[in-house]
Image 1 (cartoon, each protein chain N blue to C red):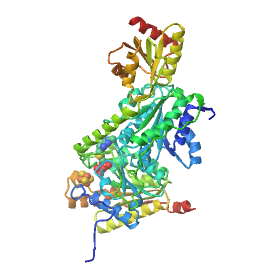
Image 2 (image 1 turned 180 degrees about the vertical axis):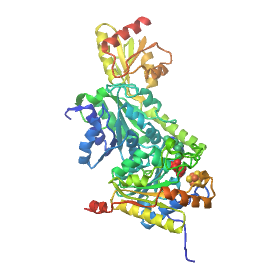
Image 3 (image 1 turned 120 degrees about the vertical axis):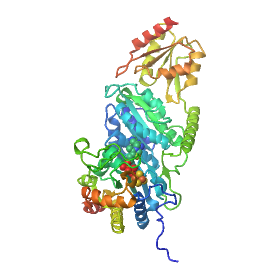
Length: 354
Length: 253
Ligand SMILES: Cc1ncc(C[n+]2csc(CCOP(=O)(O)OP(=O)(O)O)c2C)c(N)n1
Ligand code: SF4
């Protein structure tokens, strides 16, 4: 199929529609406004519903209601708005509902800046809401990848009954790139016999709920969730390696930052330094073993974790490497990013340090 | 033998947990009977909220969702948009609807969301043990207002039926009480009208029910009924505050 030029925010919305999502609830916030605007224009063509909610709190709870009713549903926002959704995400995880959430991250904390950021990594992967729960977190680095992952996100959400977060940043949302529309690999998805679509007098009532007042029941519920999390960890880890085979210095980065690391790796190689990039695509489940292997199977001497934040994913990098390699951090928060020159300098310093 | 009275088919067999003299149970019964009479148990989704009615999902025989504190109208919106042909109702206390969930209820009404809000006003936070609600009366004692609610400190009670009635999207808003057979019958008519208008597509509908909380009012069940009539009713006058039945005809066109 021919390639088309798409803006990231519009592409993620179109990907949702192509995945059969017919319900979108959102609230305006920069840099993701083109997402609700795209749905506002195009949902009616598909007999779908776009609703501008009164807040992100309301939007995520509308998504809860729609998902509980058996529909494919999406909501999107950027950092401060995602904070407001955390309550709802915890309930969605607790009630085991499939919802796809997009975060076009910007600089923080607080109102922060409207420029691209990656400072919601902790919130995304550690659970910003209360309780022992997980959200699948998919971090695309290109618009092509975002359209592929977003379509698949709906299948993952339905398969495991879990919220899936597409974690991108304002850069990916705002820029335009070529996209070739592809269908995700077919998965066998279970029927939604649990949905509240009216008993029609033919079955017991269905209940969508996250309350288990008896602690024994709640413990059992947590154990069931954990089993599901383990299964997802087995099946859904994604990552990409770039020039890693003979790399002596290994960048670990995701999303936009990984792309800058790739440019830096090319330039480093031109200068005679063997650099490579390990790019986690699923941030939860994190490619922990895969990163360890990548850093320890060949000639990697040192690891540089790069982020558009003051250092968040580096915790997972350290957990994965488990002290096997020295790790340095380079990054900048608040809406700016490390340049490839800065990344190259960081690689040199790291190599000198070993 | 002829059956003169039985549990509504709109309720499950699950034993309810309400305190003696609490009128939550009466209100459950009324909603269930209305569903049964309209023959919509199989085509209704209810949304339980957070408060003493949190377990409503176990008590109503229709499909149910449990919502976060205050968010029931947003959850109901999601359900109704997916299943416009089903009846959707929320069941919310006054802390839930008139404090933490104010934005959600106001905007559901503003949008004319075709749902019915069953709003149980007992002038107190029941489940958490008697804290002040936005509906607590001036002078009424609560665990977080030990000297009684004071206007200059806490503001005056909020009247939700009147407030929501100002919104064009609110097709029906009535305040009733459930203290005696006559008022209970009236309350049931109000609930039935709200559901009927919802199903006719008229818009947002709500019934505010003045309800007892003997436990946290520190009164016996009988005293609580008297206290409600003497104190709650003057502050929260009963009656119909919005009846935009014409919206029904517009919707039909
Ligand atoms: C976000 C959040 N804040 C606070 C609570 C604690 N909480 C549970 S019930 C309740 C008050 C409910 O009072 P009301 O809505 O008046 O219902 P009632 O119990 O009187 O029927 C509160 C504050 C909660 N569950 N969630
Ligand atoms: S605490 Fe009050 S509102 Fe709650 S069940 Fe008891 S009497 Fe009813």
